[in-house]
Image (cartoon, rainbow, N blue to C red; front, side, top):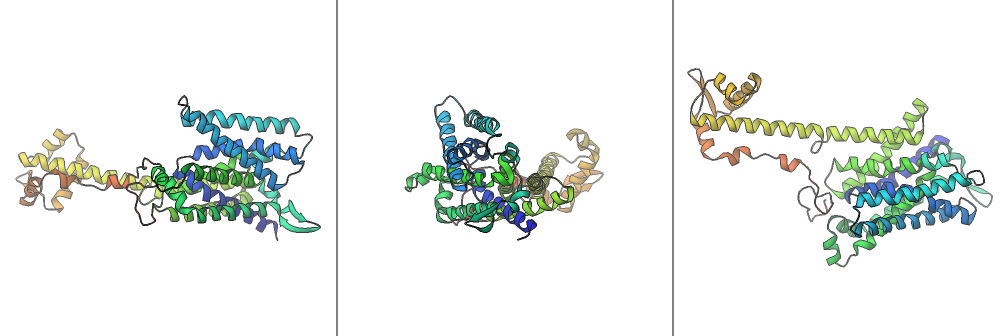
Length: 390
């Protein structure tokens, strides 16, 4: 296997596995908790190394899983005490645990084979030469086996508990009524996040793994209202970030993991601007259409009282000449307003439109396009369908 292929496979496995669990973190409004776990598992990895004396994947995964669950438990304990909000609880717990891990590494870095820069930033470029040996036989890059195993485990988790993850994400109360334990599913998901993070440590590090957990799912969130599509798009954007990041890193001769995060951010920026329903351009266009409708309605209501010349209307509304002309031309094309003796006046159709009341004139799909989050933290921007969409 060539080094380039090995790096791309490892990067793809890391991105896809992070996107799967990251999708539910984004939907549950727990992206910051993913950041906390990615840092707080560090002492678990270090302690596992000290206990075993080697960098065996299984002990480190167990150590990271224990610390990840401990992080979630401490955050919820402080939050439920009523003295701290959830964000403050996260801000208290994860710096303390992460600092403990950094201290342990700094203190013992000269005696053990743990590198602080590798833990923080990762170096996926070394993955092709860190091989997994079974006896005397080489089975290929260790990172590839670890992250592929993580990807398979996450895929199985979502496949086996898809309905449970979905209902606890969008309506925990309904889940409890149906006999599904939101707490159990929550800790199961957090354990998966912990395992995913430790699997990605040597590839993208504790800091950049946050980008892989959050940014591709957040990008998918802007483009779809269906959970299945969001999972697929999140994985796709993660893979695109991996491939594009590697190409960018080779071109600029920079960190591969950093380039992956950069490309992921660029893809998110493109979706944020160009999303056909929730993008900045779409929102601005919707607001402009609404503004045009409001201006037209105001003009119709005023002309219902009496005809008036354009100069009088411009002065009375405080509009620019261009805005008044644009509004007037639109109403003239629709046959609601006509020019009569140098003034603007309602036509019969315009008078009928005013008589029907302002409600029909003001109806506009802006509220549907605004994309408000459901109170339960789900993806349901309006109302949660029952056909498998979100």
